[in-house]
Length: 301
Image (cartoon, rainbow, N blue to C red; front, side, top):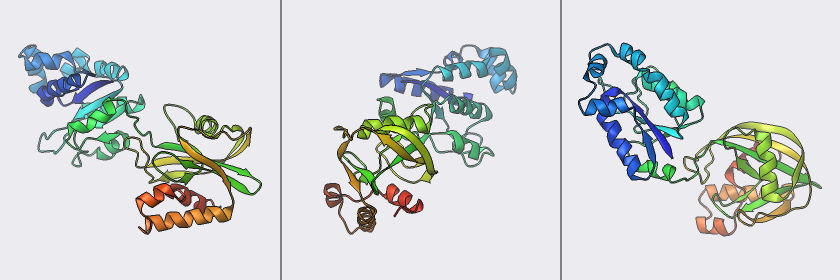
């Protein structure tokens, strides 16, 4: 993984420190070469401009903004070093805000070393763009660097009917439950494209037609990093083909009646109330909570 390190020029020593930490993990980190020169006491005429109140002249003359744009586009993500500065906790300056914006519009992951600074007027803009706060613990970056999938917070679900029954699958992996076929979006795929791919991978069925039933955010966990919520689109799907269970993801596929769905939803309610242990749930689960919520919202149960 390749990370561009961003932050105020006042944090130049820390930029080199965290660059070396990422290198030590076997990954690549980018810091503007002038920062290393400043730490070594070189390029003092430029540093004097920056520290002496002529910051914008230095930025323009040295092309810092364009350099960071290009560096961010060539990276997988950015690490924002936001320490205390000017009496502001976890400071993020205007230049760093732009770099966060560059990363955001180019679909790069945005990691904040510390939490969002609440004292700046653009705190909401930062919150709208960043992906993960490490909450001051650099070690939390490790799972992302070693290739664990990061949640994109977008999911699609497919409602498939046959003779008054609905297709469910029992998951082999977390979150253990009965659920409708579903999947994450990665990159720039459309919800419709992912619905076709995921349905075929999970069930062996091919999509003939899609009809959007509902969409919205749900606070449901998944096994991906930072997978705490998702924006969903739910489609009713007309299909063709024969059922073929995914051996790596699914214990079983089954057609269930609305009455059976209600019983699985009741078991979900009991589990959430603490009346069913985790072990019992894993052995004999009910409906996944997010699907209980969706099916009630869509007035199917």
